[in-house]
Image (cartoon, rainbow, N blue to C red):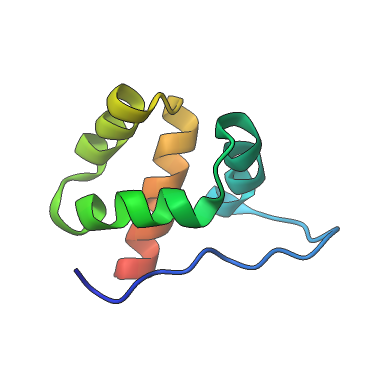
Length: 80
């Protein structure tokens, strides 16, 4: 596994765009901080195809498609 990717710091009132704009909703919907989701998904993002990781997050962790897709897309950008 490469170096640990840290969750982005968000300041109150900050306008979020792109995949990271889903992060507040992910935390609220699933009751876990983004760092936990990032740590969970990062090893799979490094080895598996995009949609394989999305499917795994949906099936094994109950995450919705849009949320899973946003997390994987954001991680892929960080790893590239």
